[in-house]
Image (cartoon, rainbow, N blue to C red; front, side):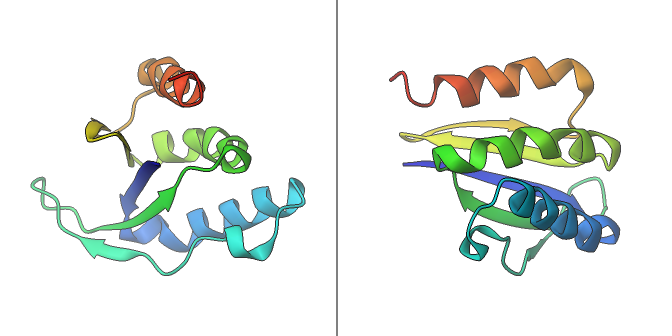
Length: 110
């Protein structure tokens, strides 16, 4: 099972959740794929963050990839965990998107 966590500053939580819902609707996915309530998490930089932990199913990959731009502009974080290996992108930058997409693409090839 592959787990991702998406963390963004608290101020952007509502907008991100709405974006995710709009992307889910655009892909005609069931409402069960909406994001639930986020978890409040701290950050050593002093920023207040919220986090969603999501099981990465193949049908959610388009939503994750489409939401990367929002994560970049909101200085969000993306964490990927599979088989005990964890990769974390803090303050996600455009230069890291290729690496994130490579991780997502490799998920079914193992």
